[in-house]
Amino acid sequence: MLVIGQIDYANVYPIFHQLNKHKEYRFVKGVPSYLNTALREGVIDLSPCSSIEYAKSFEDYILIPGISISSTEKVKSVMLYSEVPIEDLKGRKVFLTGESGTSVVLFRILVNEMYGFQPEFTDQPEGAEAKVLIGDKALFELYNGQNKYVYDLCTLWNAFTGLPFVFALWIARKDAVRAKRAEFEMFAGQLDEIKKDSKSNLAALLDHYSMKGLTSYQIIDYWETMDYSLSDRHVQGLLRFYSYAKKYGAIKEIPPINFFV
Image 1 (tube, rainbow, N blue to C red):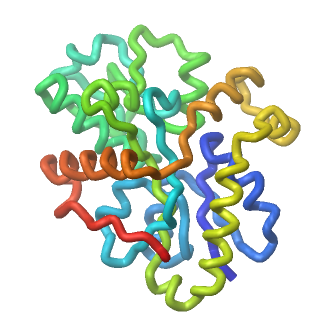
Image 2 (image 1 turned 60 degrees about the vertical axis):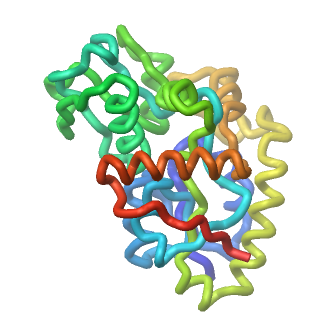
């Protein structure tokens, strides 16, 4: 039986709503940082995980082709909320969520490359003048928070590079693939079909899903911003991210992009 990590956020619900119907798999829910660790330690066989996780342990991993969690111009759930403009954050404390792997690195890259400084980061929200949030917390804050300055990190990345940003990849452990190859082949085919159909009737998903603080329209609008593809242009954006991540010491080397076939 394949053991599959499930990001416990709204962004991937259109995929997992269908995947969860497959009783031949076991699902383990968690935030991205938890699933990154679970995959690295072999607790799960595969998962949508932070794209930075692949680069950190690529020798042990292989990617499911054609699928990601990405966005082209805005994502709405990887956000900087601040009391001052982003260019004035130099010397000020910025809270970084512990739920993320990729987004924290992305923020470090953006402030250094676009604004030329490194803020003072903290893992304690008290006393911070800005905060980087991801997932459902970021989405709730977008529509319900009282923040003076709001920045979508995907929008900043697109303005900086002109490329989409790949927040998560579907990553499998190589040893699990060797042990369960037939199951992986079946899963990859099912996942591809689910991805193709994932946005065909988003309104129907609202019969099964709701989020406190968001209207039905806001939830559907959010799902429509999600990009589950992984084209050559996405890979180009991913490799650009990895090059900056290496520059700032987040990874040791730029990994080869290897797909399960």
